[in-house]
Amino acid sequence: MSDDLTTAAPAWERWLLYALAAMAAVAGLAARLWIGRDLPLWVDESWTVMVATQPDWAGMWREAWRDANAPLYYALMALWTPVAGVSDVALRLPSLLCAGTAGLLPILWRAPGLTLGARLAWGAMIWLWVGGLGFAADARVYALLLLLATAQTIAFVRLLDSPDRRAALIWATLVSLAGLAHYFALFLTLAQGAFLLAALGPRVTLRLWPAGLAFVPLAGWLAIHPPRLLEFARPDVGWYVRLDAGTSLALTQYLVGPWAWPFLLLLAVVLGATWLLRGHREEGADTKPLVLAALAGVIAFALVLILGWLRPSVTARYLTPFVPAVLLGLILIARQARRAQLAYALLIAAYLLPLAELPAIRAELQARNAYSLAPASAWLAPARPERVALLWDHPNMAIVADESLRPVGSFFLNRAGVPAETDVMRVARDGDAATALSATPAAIFWLYDDGYRPGTAAAIGRLAASRPCRLFPRESGRGVLACAPLR
Image (cartoon, rainbow, N blue to C red; front, side, top):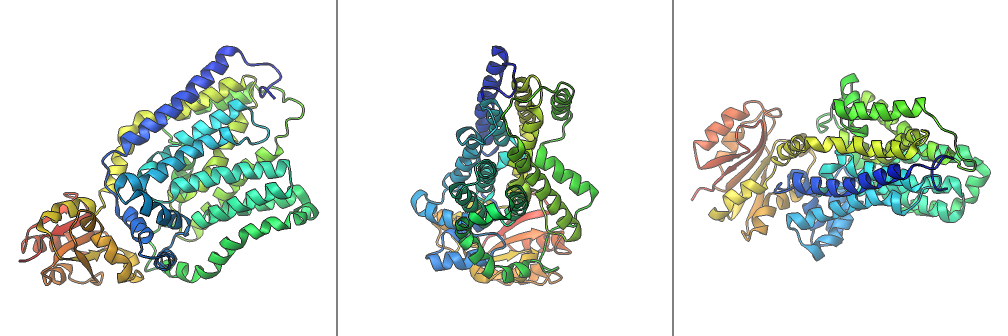
């Protein structure tokens, strides 16, 4: 199949599509490098380092079990860090590579029924998806999750197109890996599994049973991790908010793309023109597997919204597994147009438009990454403290072990050559943090949050009056107070 339609596209439309796809590749890389420059590792990334750099594998698996996240990314980083080191660049490079591979995968691994033009547009949209731009500057699981979700979506289409044991094994392996990367990927698997059973029937599905062996690692982990997850679900530990109409709309925006008017206008033009100027499909072009793959992403998203309305449990980045399927849905709409290549080109152009807002995207990342021990550690390092008292204002402190927190408090100092050790302090939410911290002669890192602890500003003022201290960032409701040790 050379094109989506019986009428060949004019050469200029094809070249426009190729030019915009190339522009997307370059612009997406440049955008990631620009918005991620000089960003310190923030607290969540420090947690990645703590789990991945345990002295042995038993320690890594213990800390992975203690965390609320699935373990695959931690295990991969435990293999990576001994080779690449723990510099900021080394820790974030796997995320950049995963994000780039996610964008290339639809082009390199063909989903049956999609032409090269459709695959170029789909890959470019995944690469330009605004929610994923910051993943390359984040040593966390989400770029890997985007890659695995893209692969799982393609594998699902290929399995429906050719339901043999090899295709089933590939799909089941990717399902297991995605589930071991993030539990919300299981919503996509649930929707795909239901469609698979309905499309193939019980008899054909049963013949694919050997592929089920790929689920063993996922099933094994799910057998032991739920007790810990239930602790994170406690009302005094959780930090999510229950969804409402406003937050549901914001999550929809995050999933599809920014709702700035130029993006929406161009997207509306593409989809509206496609609907009004529909063409005729070529014979033999089976769209059912593609449609089911896209619908699986939409249904998975709907299930998550329902969960979020019933129980506080959802945040925007958890939608990452559904992005490739939902964007595929836009591709399937565009391919109905008489000028499909032009429609694909305009879709890429629509997803290029948000790059004009890169300063705003970078400002969001700067605000997030300001919640970091890196600048505070750089300020404290010349004093070469032997011990650091760490107080963290967070609901998770109710269940987080001191053993897990100590490496987080010392990491940046140790990386800078200061052999400091961390003492974890615990002060009740309504307790006097200033008095407790003033009693220690050690250096201090207080990850404060005035939304968590009443009277935080006054306590910071009292503590700063007793020894040299500095806020990172300055004049913020959440950040790090670093104080020098008493000599």
